[in-house]
Image 1 (tube, rainbow, N blue to C red):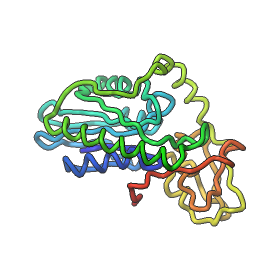
Image 2 (tube, one colour; image 1 turned 90 degrees about the horizontal axis):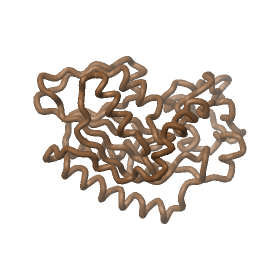
Image 3 (tube, rainbow, N blue to C red; image 1 turned 90 degrees about the vertical axis):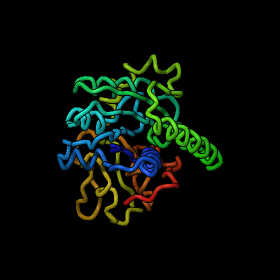
Image 4 (cartoon, rainbow, N blue to C red; image 1 turned 135 degrees about the vertical axis):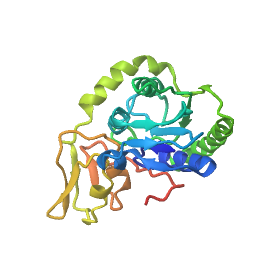
Length: 255
């Protein structure tokens, strides 16, 4: 069983690759949380994977809320692992997941990190195509290594993308709580009213009003899916994103 959260496909791709190797069930945390599907029964020997991107060196709000609501039933102590995707450092996201599990008398057995192309265009530009390709090639090697470790239920913390910035994790994550406001989101005249942004928003923040998207809650998860996946490139965040690129993982097809 693999729980995942993904805005632009990096963590989805990692989850799909792990699913291909181990099987089980692939569960979108955002969808499950919105539908209140938070109670799961494991079969004998079934592993639990938790795959997600790091936000501000910590957990996306969707992941934190899902983990708080999650109930896992198992006849034995399950093998639980997490795979965290990041553009640079994961900070203390692995420790935060371990703490969430500990509150439920569950143990995180293994933790991994995978560097993927950055996609938070609200704060910085995406890497060029050549850098994206090189990063994705390296990510594939990391995934293959993780698959090998999971085949033998290897325990340990194998995070390789913590970095010195991990020391700033508590401060940065507090900023996330105040920074993820929606008031700077807007749509340009390029909008075709396709409705994709409303459909894919994991926070349920976007609603089409008179055919155009509106952000109806004060805050969202800031996954940037609406910006990056808009086919008309019509969604912007203040002036910051006008001249910046867009990124979607090229190896996934969103259902």
